[in-house]
Length: 248
Image (cartoon, rainbow, N blue to C red; front, side, top):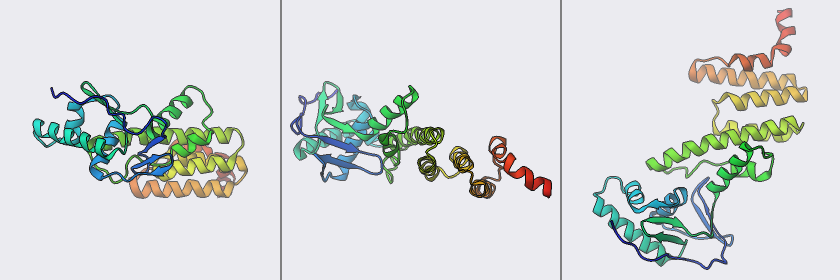
């Protein structure tokens, strides 16, 4: 096991340090963007996503194809560079590595909001909608990023859908459509946001818009997957389509 230096405190605790990983890597000190070399971005992102990871875990994930000693050597060099750059506080305590306690990570905020909503909090809060918009580190293809991206994508989709439902229940149709469309943009083939869009148009009394949204989804599903919308979604339009079926 490789020993490490004492805790590296980085910038003063009074600074506000924000690490944004949703929508792309960004590091902010008191709302000022900090340029971080790509090699250091990877270690900061990984430690931000896996607080308290061991040195072996970090080295293995960042340099999966390197021999163990070379991976540990690369990790020591990366940690030294982070200290020299002073861009972000990293604490190395024994065998574990984590970001400083004054660093706020947007992924943690998304997880916290999702957990609160799951416990009964109102998802209509602005932070719930804003935090849930972006994918994790788009353009990064490391295995550890891909796994975490999919997990967070599912959390984000459910959060946006719950937000749309809450607005719909409250009669806030414009906001319901915004949240449902945001979920739709994230996953166009997912039925739930399409269903929420249809429900919102029906709640507004816009039968034409509801039918249009339904047929757009039906045609997309047939073209891409050779499937039909579920019986649940088709049932939403029974009352609208009944006169058409009778006249036909």
